[in-house]
Length: 591
Image (cartoon, rainbow, N blue to C red):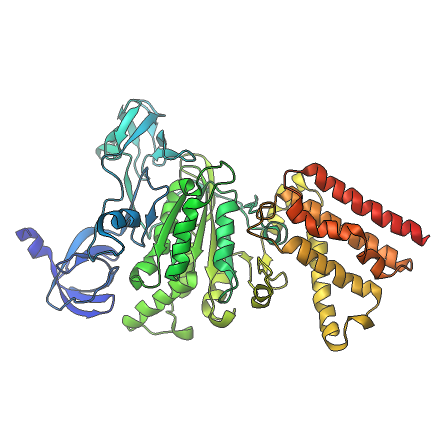
């Protein structure tokens, strides 16, 4: 320890869990990183009062004592960004867990610091600029193959502009090697493949665009009934066991995003272990290669330090912004924002702040906003159209959607997939309730659907109306039974059951049903609605509902999702022809 460091160091005066009070740090700034105690635990300044400051520590503070030193670093909590992030597993402050495991074993030692990037690894860099060019922040300087699925685009860091005085030739370079030099008004700047960015500061973009293209997920109830747009924000609230994590796994695997960032924030260790074990085994359906080649995992389980849980979602969204700036469509899965909000509540209580609803801090809404508003569809600084789509799960206690986290989340998202405990208990997955869920992106993505399926909006509206009618009729059925209803109303119940079983229910383990293309979705729904439209006329003509229910095509519709592959357009067309033919015969028999 040098004399200069000793003079700059402050002193711990009090420790309260992850919150440490210190004095003597006269020149620190808000959100500056400090190193606490002899083990130099990573912390962040969150309150300043003259020479006194409050630090939240991202590691276990057991054993800290007043009088021990605390060292400023001079900068905010920042991520290292560069080639080699794909396929890695980080904790909440970007420590690579797989490397720590290889070096130290299953547990992270306090004060552990491991290089994010391998200093010996070399990347084959191909320049896309030349000497003498004028460049601005965000410009692509060159490319390299990060994985078989992801081309890494080396960006000029935002805020730097000038003329290129030197650029590396095509060849193999370490991430820390200079690949360009830029002459700026403040002097010549050396550019490497690596850059740093503060996690709490959104990365800039050129223009924000309207989210008018759906993020295709392959899940019928989402794509057809409650679509989310590329660059949109959605929430999956649900009680324990309703399938939030399972739904996010399906979205991560099947959605048509280029890059997946999965944030396990405060989840149980066994759930996160399942993600860490299963994701490397998953095969990317688009390429046939490992899904991890285009995935980054941020793991911060419930037994890890609570302060690191608070920062983990900012770590994840900053990683997503970095790849968005290259021109990629990124999907962020945050599981779960409720555990993150609980971390805010605990930290707020230790700071002795005034609590509001259910003990949460008053800044809970603004904190949620600071996360969700970093999504969006944009034109990046490099001129490419790109997006960040955010899907955050919410875990309300007892499945109570009136609690603060769920209610405040609804203010900042436009797509709400409400999971239902009764559906989950009935083994109906995804357990998304079609009556309490909604999507405000439906009108914006309607044009995209219109070019592929002109009847999508009308079919969607008609199907949802049937489900609403069925809900009202079920109240009568519970009182007096279904037999007292006329066949015209029992037809509503029959078609609603057909929609639930043949369309909304989806098996994540069935080869043909785990992913459903928009074309197959529309084909199945068209068969059901065709039976609804023609069935009403048949019943009005005097035929009983039993005659419709007993048609062979009913079983064919129920089996279609598992029997007919998505790419078999001929079989789907044949199914519709069969439905039409059998209904026509029934109409003919009437006459």
